[in-house]
Image 1: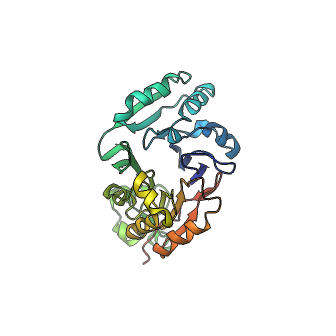
Image 2: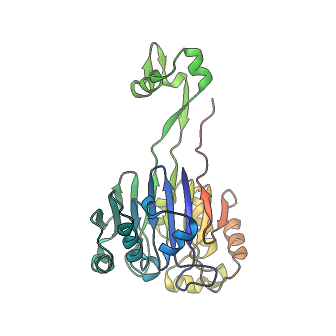
Image 3: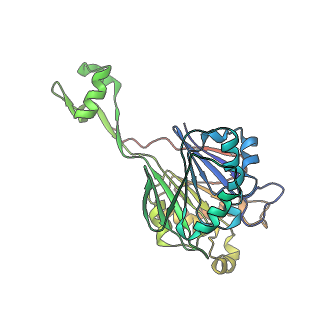
Length: 297
């Protein structure tokens, strides 16, 4: 299963309808928890998500609305007796702050601190790139390698079945049958998480060609001066990012508390990204990853 569970969607101030940030990406057997703001542990209870699903915690930066939920989440992992390793990723400039948050948490022996300070891969299929905010900030991207999809009718016609299918995948040919004869290319899925930033090259790199792009959308286009001053994005800028990246699904979030209704933000982003699906996230929403793209034969 590959699904984004939205735990909170507000920016600096929570509202009656929106909790502070929190996003859990379920990706096969892994769970990537992004920016757990205050109240994330409780939101997980409302969402019916066990803390044991978490294998990675990813902080874009160390502002409180993106990290004050960390002690509660770690303490819940400890209370639930989670035995698997949980990697905590964060900008290395926030080391003292992160260690302070971890220090007030219940001890979790399987917690592994993994700071990063530059663009690149930081875990299997997980990479980061610098964003442009008031403190050091990084966005995240999860990328599945490209693969191939087997065509059952062609496998049957070639007399290949069972364990021979795996052997053909590994070796590229079997009994005179090439992999290309019975399969088609399949693009790996990709997911990007871009939060608290003005438009910048790092955001462009992370978003490029993504199936799902989760982007901050703090302000409407009419408040572009505020976005510039606080180094955030407007709805239109989020739409521009998705359009240039050819993102398939743009999920808008991190809304200023001034917007009780996000319809205007969706319209502004959609106008700039006509070929993308654009959705405004609400707390406890769930979004399935788009189906993989397959090249037809």
